[in-house]
Structure formats: C-alpha cells, structure tokens
Image 1 (spheres, rainbow, N blue to C red):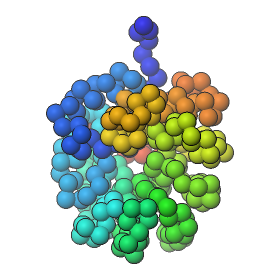
Image 2 (tube, rainbow, N blue to C red):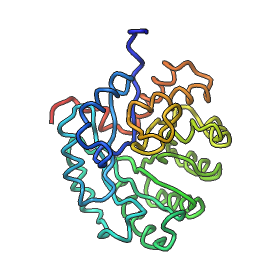
Image 3 (tube, rainbow, N blue to C red):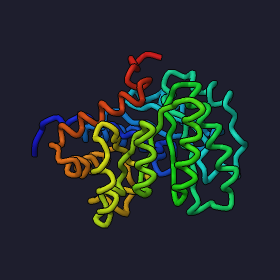
Image 4 (cartoon, helix red, strand yellow):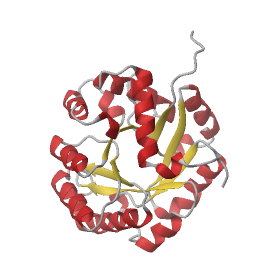
Length: 270
C-alpha cells in the first residue's frame, strides 16, 4: 500500500451539521485529510441553525461555512433579509451565500417564495462579494432567467452546486462567469450525458463536492457520503477532462481559491 501523500483537493459543499455525522465529525475530518481533502465548506440550509454550523467551522481549521435558506425550506422558514445575510458574512470563516435556488421537483408549490428568497440571496452575494451557492432542480428556465436578471443589476460570483441540470442552464451559468460543481452524481455509471456537459465546460470553472451525507459516488453508492469521498468524484473528473489526477486536483483547488477567495485568504487565526 502506497504511503505517498495524495494530492490536495477541496470538498466545496457538504453538510457536517446533519445528524448523520453526529459524534463522528473529528474522525470524518481526519479521514478526509487522509484522502487529500484538506479543506471543506459545510453548508447551513436554515438560518436558525447557523450557530451550530458556525461552531463546527470554528472548531476545525479545515472547515469553512456558508449559510442561506434552502429552496425546499423556503416556505417553512422566515424569509431571510439581505441585512441578515450580510451581518452573518462578517464572520472570518463564513465564505459563501447559500445554499439557495429553485427546486420544482419536490417543492414546486412554493415556487414564488423560492424566487423571492433566491433574489434576496443574490443581492446579498453582490453586496458581500461572496459567491452565491445555487441548488437547481427541474427549474432550469426560471433559474437561468433569474440569475441573468440578477447579474444585470450588478455582477456577482456563483457556483451551481451539485450540477445535474441540462446543457442550457450550464451554458447560461458559464456565460455569466459562474462555476459548475461535480458531485457523486457525475460519477454514476448512467450519468454519461452529465459528464458530457462537464466535458464541454472550461476546466478552470469546475469544482468538486460531496453534498454529503447524500449522493455517495461509486464504490460507496447507496451508503452515507462523507468529504473523503470527493476524491472518487475527482478521479472521474480527471478522466472527463483528460487530465492526470494530480493536475485535476490542483486545477480544481485553484478554481476554489479563485471563487472562494475568503477561504483562500484564511490564515488559521480568527
């Protein structure tokens, strides 16, 4: 067994506060480091849970965090305000706005409140200069339109997290200078069309993530996902772009640093 240190990569989107990881977070972060995943962004999906998510980032140098109202929760939670998000973003390890977005697969009935919430998060991303983190499912046309309209009001940065939408939304996002993030879905055997969409994108706009505890890539599919497994998705990403794994790891880490510049500037002292 090789003792060579694996290339460093970043899990740009995980949910370490979820109950699936209770009592195991230190071990999970240690396993991630062993796999080369030396940094990760844990995502708060309901703003009332922000203190718990923040505490995980504060306790672990490798962990950064973002917060927003997930679209599937938009009808259940108080509508966020730009001021609230801007205030939260003052924390030194708060590095992104979201996740926010549109989900018409599970929660189409709340489409209008989802749109209102999304626009608030776009405004907060523009004001803070932090990247917007987008969840999109079965809402490609509305998503592309709202992202464009928001950009016309003033530029902002954005990542299409766990990208699994169609080629048109990918094109719209890339035209705005946004990034696409590869999750375990891109590693599923039947995801040929999705891999083709990624392959058509510039490699300097690609991130890697787990969205753990969900969407574990092979060989762990169907089991609980964790940040270490982003290495499996990155291995598929390297194949998609015709790169050696170390080169793809380096490229996606550079992409992360460019987009999540606040995390890149973190010195390890609050």
